[in-house]
Image 1 (cartoon, rainbow, N blue to C red):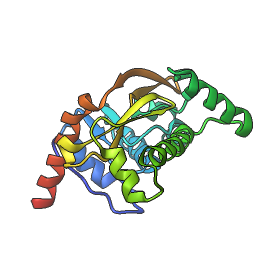
Image 2: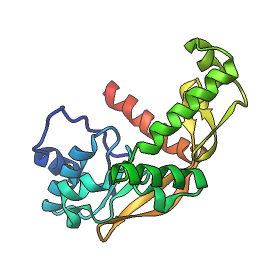
Image 3: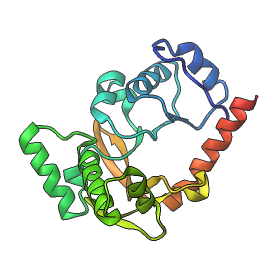
Image 4: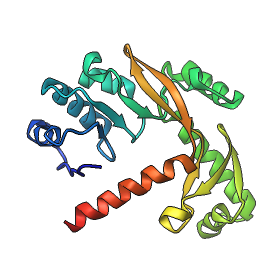
Amino acid sequence: ILDLIFIPEGTKDFYPIITKAIALKPDAFFASRTPPGDFALIQKQARELGYEGVFVADHGSDTAMVLKVAGPKAAEGLIQSGASDYIGFAYTPEMREVGERYLKKYGTQDAWSLEYYNDMLFIKQGIEAANSIDTTKVVETWRSPGFTMTGLYGKVRWVGKEVYGINSILSTPLPINQIKNGKEVVVTVVTWEEMVPFIRAVLDAEKKGKSS
């Protein structure tokens, strides 16, 4: 990680920031917590400045917005976490069924529709396992060793203790897609264990950036 750049909210002219970043000769630009629309604009402006490296949107997938803001040419090759086409990517019958029901009712595939559906399933299972609607008891049950739940992705578990000191992140298989010829193509699927080194590197860079 060459640098960690914090962007003021509402920024639309990224050219000065990008110019300084390009001078560092990075292999890639990572979005981190930058909103999808802003990162798409960064892609567009960086390409205009001649940057030919890779862009990685680790905040989630919003291919439609990226193509609209950055344009197909600038968006080409973008690597994103998640997948907007849940029906095409579905690796469980439940994913496909809920995705098709949502598409039939609303006429589109929302990148987060399955996540919201999963949330309801997890809350329900947490309440049932805790035998209580007390939120503290439900959370304690979620975080108890070995506790798993069933969602649209199959079995899920709470992780994060080795990085954050507490299990507070739901671990599910995470698809990684890349925009190719105006469409997202799933190129691999990663697990929590595979993501830990990357997360630690980002957190270390943030600490160094705040202390300098």
